[in-house]
Length: 309
Image (cartoon, helix red, strand yellow):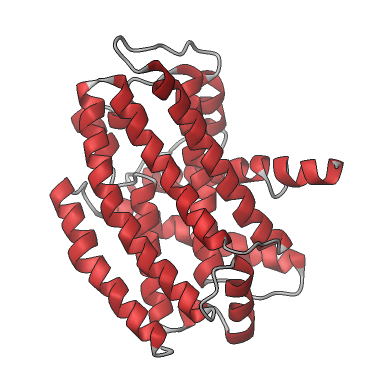
């Protein structure tokens, strides 16, 4: 029992996911600062930012739908925790179950959905604008990610188990070693960029336009739950991408961890570069980018995967 508790709460569970995600977010902030000739925050800044929220009062906006307003960040965090546990246990302990790929896909939709519901329940005009933008964007990037997921499933022999996707990469090499795998990886990185609300896809929380958008009315512990969710997604989304397309076999556990962290840091670096060389897109431009550029590319990737390429 103690071993199971440690597995889910410490390593490779909640605490590990939160720590690595916070450090990944810090690295992204640090790289952004260096690109802009600034020093950037210290490594512990994200932990302080989250901790201080739990010592502040959670204010309730007038006219808000209280039940949904309070429940949204809690459900958001719960879904992210489940995703992190499932992915980390698969990658580090080789624990999987039938249909876990589909479960992860559904669970990853919940944070966006309840961010939108929380914003709508607040009745704040700026939050409503953010919710409308996030809704439109979600309908675009989720379809793109599904195409990349289908490519990984096809290349695993049409299996919807993470273990089978991993096994096929161990036997045949990582999926990124193929044309369809490269396309799927590219689509997944743009999906993660939009899911994490990073420039150029941060229009739902655009500080210069709508202050904080979807989370403008949140404060105290409720805002802390949203912050923790985002930090954990900085771990789980790159981990999902690595598991699907860049799983490199290594007999040694130490070497396996080393390879993971090297690829993880590379993904964070790529996302930071995309952020710092692009301006924020308008919502219609972002939708056009996902629907009319990336989605057809995803269809091409599926065709190539079916052809074994």
